[in-house]
Amino acid sequence: MASLDPVLDKDGVRLTVDDAVATVTLTNPDKRNAQSPALWRALTEAGRLLPGSVRVVVLRAEGKSFSAGLDRQAFTPEGFDGEPSFIDLARGSDAELDATIAEYQDAFTWWRRSDLVSIAAVQGHAIGAGFQLALACDLRVVADDVQFAMRETSLGLVPDLTGTHPLVGLVGYARALEICATGRFVTAEESVSTGLANVAVPADQLDDAVRDLTAALLAVPRDAVVETKALLRGATDRTYEDQRVAERAAQARRLRDLAGVGE
Image (cartoon, rainbow, N blue to C red; front, side, top):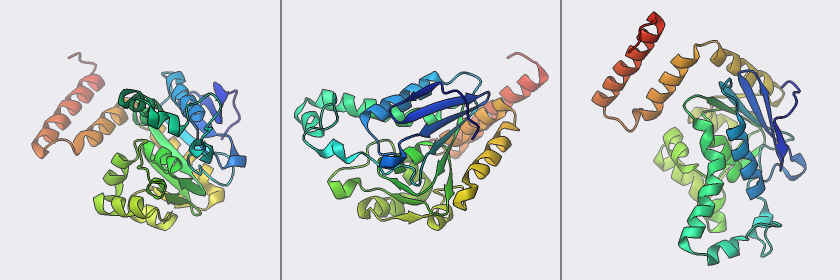
């Protein structure tokens, strides 16, 4: 990716913007891009700082691993400096605990905004929160050394950073349950064959593959992509007949726009 002045660069997250393309980079390779509440707040801020010109957001990570998941410091009694420990959270009220988890989830929700297409470029380990961050994106391009794993159940927890919905949608309930309950690794080959990833490439070709996909997305009129994304995302929640209605309405909007006719 081109070197640009960062719009945001803190707590292990860097955001750069080049006209229609924004790049969010995890920048703590020495810790395998382990995640923390501070990193999640930085990711949320990155989403808020995106200018309206951005059409594609690329999520990438420095180093050999995309993200090893939640920093294990979270499981110590002390937790992170200035943050409530997990023990403190557990001792709080239901409302406080729910609000805190909801705040953490904000870092994982904006990637699927209707006006954007997000691409995760994933290499090496993507474990737990790292797996869920990759799942937060619309598309995943993976290196051939990728290893996805959902390890929350081995810690007595559940995946709670919005990863369960897209995982079931991509690979189906039975496989999603098996992946989460066993915590096993999912390789590049399996991730492509099951629909978890769009394509796998040699690690040294990852950036080029993402660049090519980005260019292809930008070659299509933005409003057509926005309408198509909305149709596809809503398809599973609509009946066949309701989807037909939605398609007609979307196409009518596109035709009127192309013809310069107001509704």
